[in-house]
Image (cartoon, rainbow, N blue to C red; front, side, top):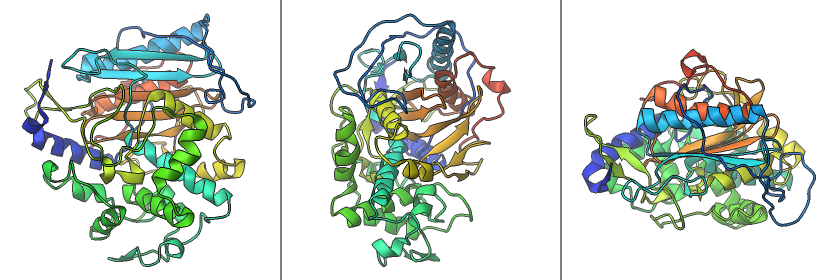
Amino acid sequence: MRARPFAEAGRTVRRTAVLVAASALLAVAVPAANASGTARTSSTERTSDTARAPGAADGAGADRHRTTGAPDGCDAARTALGRALDALVTGHGIPGAAAEVVGRDCGGRWTAERGVADLDTGRPMRARDRLRIGSVTKTFTATVVVQLADEGRIGLDDPVERHLPGLIRGNGHDGRTITVRQLLQHTSGLPDYVEAIVEQPVDEWRFRHFEPRELVATALAMPRPAPGWHYSTTNSVIAGMIVEKATGHGIEAEVRRRIIEPLGLRDTYWPGDRTRIRGPHSRSYVPAEDPADPALADGTEWNMTFGGAGGALVSAPGDVNRFFRGLFGGRLVSAHGLAEMKRTVPADPERLWPGARYGLGLIASPLTCGGMWWGHGGTVPGGHRALGAIGPDGRGVALALNKVPDSLRAETDFLAAVDAGLCPAPHKNSTDNNNQPREMA
């Protein structure tokens, strides 16, 4: 199969972007897949301080890799993860799927990869490839805000008005009654500007630059959402503006200085107005408008200023794992700050799935093997889908797809990989799991 030129699929990408808005640029649930196949894995142990399990003692030194044996439970986890990725590629038409798992067991680090990163060249999908990580960006932004709260420069219960006077006014919204915590927790009651942007013809906004204030103004002109938890990228854009007001530097600079550079995230960067992804990366794809047409359109090139502090970052699974393990390992925020991030409210099951909860830039969800995973997922209109999560034993999983799942079953099989990567044993068929995501309109 080869990719069609993007120009032939404008209406298709617009429809895909509407799906993105309906799912609010986020990802993840935890049912398991039922498919055949085994994972292509590499089993290594990494001892650098950027790849240790949360809670491990600090240390220095270059990365070391060595192949090790794996207990039966690890083989079962690899098989389960491989089956989840197989289901996506062979059963749902996802061109490529990849995952990296890191923990203190199973050799330390291993990957599973299926399909192709580029339909035109047939280049295999690799877990080391870069991709657009969408709303995983929200956790980076929330982390910087909590760092500033640790430093006493921002109060999580400060009203937005204290930092950005006059920004949120009108249509029933008032920055004097909305707190920083509510922004990060999506309980501010602000609409999601993404839903308005994607109603426009895609060619009118795909390559254009957006300023944060423009995005906020778009949101304030929209109808008010129903009361309660409402996922909105507007919240993260405003949080990024608060960071700039508090530090004198944009959110991009602060994320680089406070997260990317200290953790050595070599594949993570802000693209700005650059529409191409630099370095080795997977292409991303959207379906043809006609369901009977097997061709896919290439949607890789995009101006991600429309996502900003809520969805613009480029990264790779290895870096996503390092980020979440650094966050939960105490390298980025204080113990008190992490506890604040883990204070959750119930998420709307119509937007996520039963049992999911939301903290400060973090999703929490039950695992089939017990306990909760913590992390975030992201989706972008051109077709990339990413997710990073960490389990109760410190094992982390990061996932990458180069086409967004476009059915409930495909979404369920994608989310099965989270469970497969974090649980040590095979799981039930996903159709038997009650924690299924809702169909996205």
